[in-house]
Image 1 (cartoon, rainbow, N blue to C red):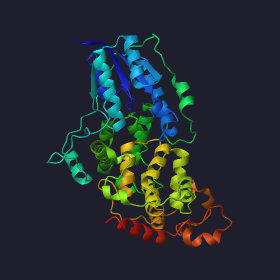
Image 2: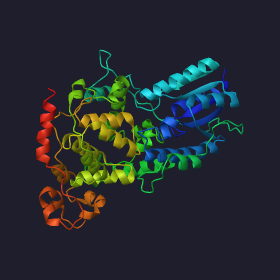
Image 3: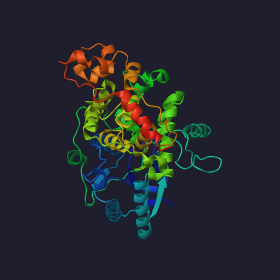
Image 4: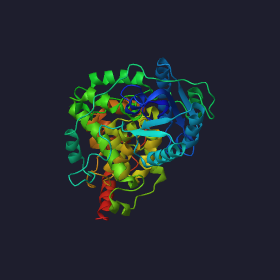
Length: 458
């Protein structure tokens, strides 16, 4: 027997195509009301990890989603308030007898959804939570002994033995609009001005319409991904934010790149890091390897400011940080370079960098961001050994040989030969009229300090 009125809660799944929770609800209900809830802990100043770029992208995605729902005869109702209060008000106003949403796995999401389940029990309303966000549901890919994988390679090979579900579509979804008043309604236009500061330089704009366009371009530019993915001046897929907010499903991404094995590997890294967070939630705030809690990180406010503003005097680092500050995005290889520089050259706590990335990245994802920072700091799952330290001068020359990426983001250096940029630690004295700083530290000296710092915990 079908439920009369269902309530679907969008979170980070802003599409109608291949939306597992929404499609499941379609088979269970006569009518579907759709909502999105802006919560204070998400979009207010109380969120120390709030990214204006991510919120802008999210609202743009919601605007596109709203248009698509309207085409199906429905309406996306948006609210600002506490989850339980908004949902309770919707239940009362629309006579809801069934609720469904896609499953998320962060500690915050698990606690939030537990409260929603409790509310549904009190209201005697059926509620289903459906896996959708990952190629394989977190917690289901385990070792032969039933324990979570802590190494990527065996996890990766285990994933390759599992079947990926193909994307699904529904021609017309049974949405229902309502003019009934529900408290705390907010328009998306108001949300855009109230909850974020629009960035005119943001690299990618939200919404499935844009996602499809960017995906089609990526399928052309990434044919040689295995050879070019570390080259800073080469285009990336630019799909990370669309995946994060579900404008494209992870299964659609897999279908598009299933024959591009190195790109599929990146999708599985995403699964891996969420499995780590789901299995070991303490990694949000603490090193995965307990011994790394003993490290005495340095506290140098001036160096950290130089890093955040792209004024360290290490061109490849500064180019990456300026790209991030302007566009809300940074090339993946550049992310590793700047993270290594912060932790193993400046000797500053990885958590400081993790937080700065969180408030700047359009594609901020707590599991992937944490996993990558702990990988580079050698404290996380399957992380690089502590003695592997990226040499920023070698990285500069190897990843951006003609310095085109560096010159794009550091125009002060546009007239300087690439070879001199890659050896700026030696050549800066020749360009005292250039308004770009000399290196704030000596890499070789800092490398030895880093090795000594890490050796103390062994």
